[in-house]
Length: 146
Image (cartoon, rainbow, N blue to C red; front, side, top):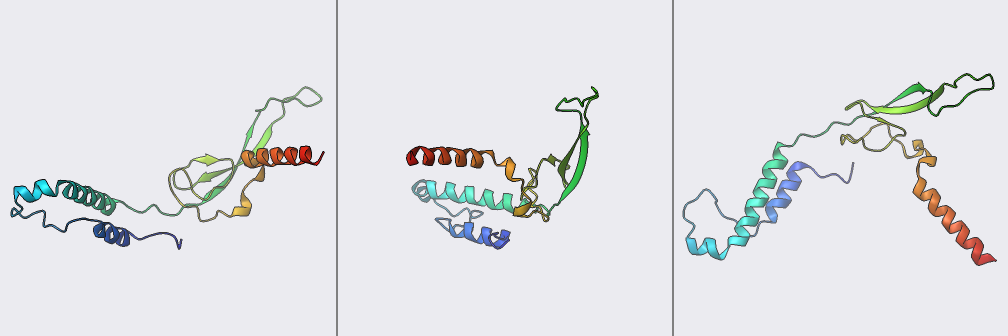
């Protein structure tokens, strides 16, 4: 959580990015000034709109993964006597939105930061890209060694 920024810090930073400090409620701005500084004024308007949006935002509370088990006949398999095999699977469900996942992740799709997530809880078999890359590197090193 050390890398997060507060709303007030973000708003202060955005206010510092304005090109011109102008009282936008004042009617004393001349037409020449408006024409000369049109780009800067439009940027200020965009920053002001962004600040209003940030002020209206509410923080998403932390969530946690709840472990569940469910049973399914998929994939379809039969035992030696010809009966369907009932498979049991473990899933994790977000307590904020109820969305299920096969494995724990640091964040849910609803944006909640999951408080009970630990890196070592991840299922290493789910990282297919990493496994595929390791296979490619292994094959390449074996070819080079020949």
